[in-house]
Length: 390
Ligand code: SAH
Image (tube, rainbow, N blue to C red; front, side, top):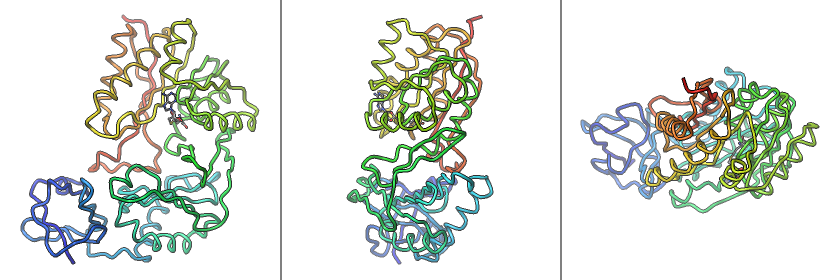
């Protein structure tokens, strides 16, 4: 078996499971892209098994501290552990919508498995895992007998590993289905042309934001299929507007509203324009939600992304009077919590608004954070209240 000798002080000695190309001291044997390799430190001590792909910046991702092959038995053991954890944290209950496996956080780098009731989807965004996906599928069937299994391998990460996009139904007949959360319907579309649009990582945050919504005029920017907007309407908001640039997402949002008998005005706009025009027109809101897509795919355009974040925060804050609430989220892997908070502080200074932090939020617990892997802590949410400056 081929492998890598890792340089001293590499992140793998500090709790991480990745090896960057710049951290490789030596390649031994003749490992091929996608192979399982062994990792060693510079004193020849074994560090475990990893999947190898020299085409990626992250040339090796460790998945075990031991010698380990990627067979169906291995996937069965990893899936059992992952599912046991979701049971322990109370995710395995109606409507049975949760992330069953989340990549490095479950010892399966590049593998994501989501469950929407009896319909399951998976992604294998690393070459090593992609090659062994039959073992994964076999283990999924053995353990869980899902009615539907759909491969959703369209993610951007795939190109970085030199792979083509694939969408494939491996089992059953996928269907569009509304699932219910706290009296609100959201739509899962496991084989739909677009991403399902059901953002599992935000499900608990709907509840936290809705808890502030009673009697308020709510503006939900980047609403997608209405997650925040609908939960706020259900919680007794006096008026709710949801804005998104995607027509199909808004169509789903309107279906969801109709199914739950909720009234929300869904508008198709660029949220940047909406905020600008609403501010100019003197529209009034008491609760504004900002949940934009990741504005940055790489560290290189971080500055630009932060300017985009700041612009929408500044406009939103200017529309809020004392007592008004801003619920804001960043899902960019390259923006850490401190940077994000600083952006919000800068926006509040420019908007001449005092802020009080009401809550700090993150991704749902079925996307576990591994403290040694900072990239696993990616969803940052803040609920702040505007207060009069002292
Ligand atoms: N809040 C949603 C998830 C938002 S995902 C939820 O909880 O389900 C980001 C959304 O932003 C997507 O629906 C995408 O269509 C939308 N979007 C991207 N750029 C936009 C823009 N400039 N203006 C408005 N919406 C945009």
